[in-house]
Each structure stands twice: as C-alpha cells, then as structure tokens.
Image 1: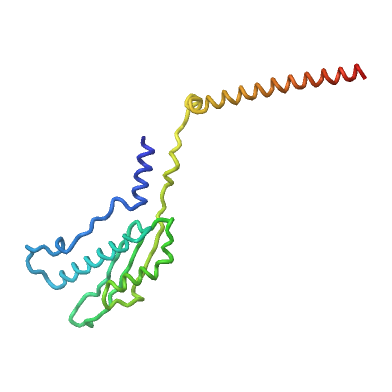
Image 2: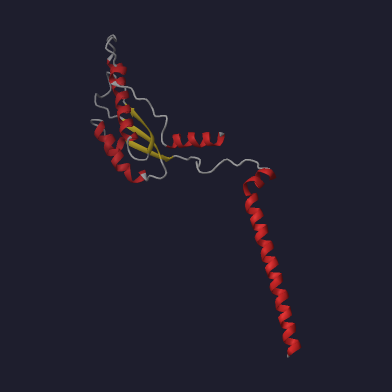
Length: 187
C-alpha cells in the first residue's frame, strides 16, 4: 500500500536512516598517493576531525543527524602562526529528546576534540525534526459501498436495537394506558 510505504520512509527518516558514510584515514591518505602540500594535508586532517566529531554527536541519544564545520584560518607568511579556528555545529534531533539541556556538554565535547580552540568560538544550532505522524493514514475518498462494507454490520445492529427499543416502549405505553383505564373504571 502506498500510504504504508510513505509511513515507512518517514519512520526511517525520523531515525536518521540512511546513515551518512564516514571516511577514514586510509580513504583520505591513501598509501599509494604522491606527496601533497602542507595545505592539502591540513585540509584532510580538518576534514577527518569534522567527521570524527559528527560521528560522536550522531551517537548521542535523540540525534538524527549532525554536521560540523571547522573554519581554519588561511596560513600566510604575514599572518600570525596561531590564529584561532572556529567551529559550527548543526544538530537535527528527535522532538521526543530535549537536547537544549545538552548544549554545554556538546560544546565541551567539541572544545576537547580540537586543541587550542577558544570555547567562545563554538556555535551550536539545534533543530527539532518535523515529521509526519506515521500513525495517521492518508485519507482516501471512500464510496458508500466501502463505508457499508466497513460499518454495515454495526449500522444493522443499531437499527435492530433501535427497533426493539421502540417495540418494547410501545408495549410499555399500551400496557400503562390499559392499567390507568382499569384503575379509572374501578375507582
């Protein structure tokens, strides 16, 4: 059924599937690669750090996806050697989990993962995921025949029950009138 497929895809998305594939050191630094420039090596190391932090954050309860960006300053001859980098973290999380209380822990994790990073240079953005309620089925246009197939038995039982109530009520009223007439004739 198409509506079940939509619900299944939504449930998978809610739980962060399909998961991101992370690269490892061997992928970024293949053994058969020629010598690269220091700038390229630094970019690869930063990329691996980003992925490592993303993986740690993704393992937290309630996190559906995490993205980390480490902004390194460009090294030039006239720039000071130790310019501080900054880190941006974006986390999409399940609304059932309150990650707002975990911002300090997340900042601490990022701070401890990157040497010489100033704590104030870490920005965290948390966004709850908005999803369709998988329990709600997509409403189809039902015909009278479909409605009767589903609710026909209960409709028939209600009509029969109502007829019995009317029948018994009529008998009660007739008997009550006869009793009152007999009392008035005898009295």
